[in-house]
Image (cartoon, rainbow, N blue to C red; front, side, top):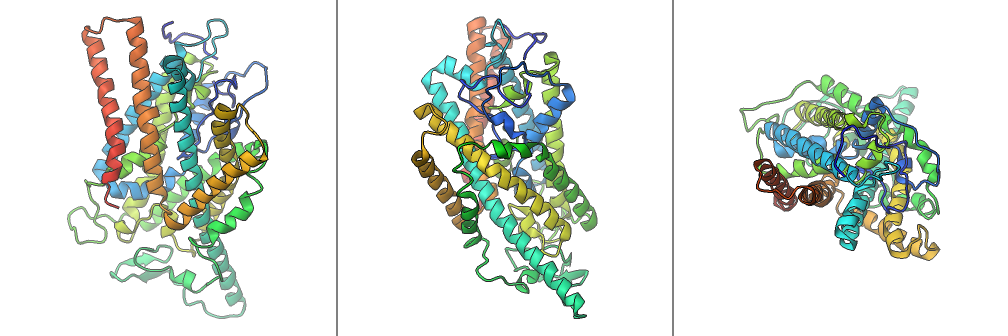
Length: 503
């Protein structure tokens, strides 16, 4: 069966048609994992037999964009700082183009296995299973499991940081309000301050690597430590939630998933406008010096690989497209919007940050003082979002592990409890000893992307083309093979380049 742009293919009403594929949509995306801010009902197996509703172009584009808006957003200013401005822009455009191209390959390959009667398109993991057998199933499911596990770790670290900063901020504003009522003067209520380098800063900006947030020093909370106590407090919150048999309750918050992302984008632009540009391309001794190129560029390529990763769930979005002949166009528009969103947030904060660029943290909220009230709102919104996502992603990870091994989503309280203990212990360990979301995202993203984003789409497409047309001596086929080989080499090189980043 050949790919036809006019073929009437059944996209996403939020759920897959079948549960026997053994695959579920990624978050991310949104390591990323993300996990991503998409409608989580698409992750859950459906028991409904009703005909899915066709989905229009705008809904499809927005759904794909939303699915790729994940926790990588918070690491983008740091990632651009690692790569340099010009190099960062080139890498972002290159990775977006490669990701979109391999996503199109996934669509085309899966379409060739469409049911001749119903027109239903199988997930890409099912295609890999048909071509490679059990090996294909293991590769695809394990990649998804690694992605979800990485997402859970990043979520836990972010929740620890967001909760820590939010409580400190609330404590600060509470103390300031009490001081105002008693007509006392708060010594920290100044419009600006000067750091140790003589740079005039807005009092909402700090450099944690060089100095403590003086506002937090005025509001100490007993037994309140970002890395030593807060990660353990979260155990009390999530221990009962992740043991639940079903995560359907948390899917009700899916529609609100894009709100924190939009608010974060608006906040970044407004913050950058208030700070103004602080750039110096010539004076390397300037605290505002911006590199155009950097040897640490793989840090950005790793983060962006996770940010652009949606290949294990792309069929879910385009299965029931109202106009399947426009799928490639809609996918391209979605990736353009994703590039714009990540670029605006990353570059605006990077170029306007008023302190040393090297001070940018892997979660840029760590550079914002507790005195910023708008930042408090943004962090509370993100924290609530992650609280609803964590049990859901844990459920997805459980399904990814237990369905292939036991044939059941919930094999028993003991099995689930043991898995949850391992997951939570790993999350707490990383939050205490390795709270670097950018590094976790780039390693997980580069590894999963190497297999699922670069290698498998090109290999599968090559096999299917070979089966349909064995005349590889034609110039067009040779050129296509060379391009796919180059993409595979790029994906492998991107993963191993992560170990060369100077942290």
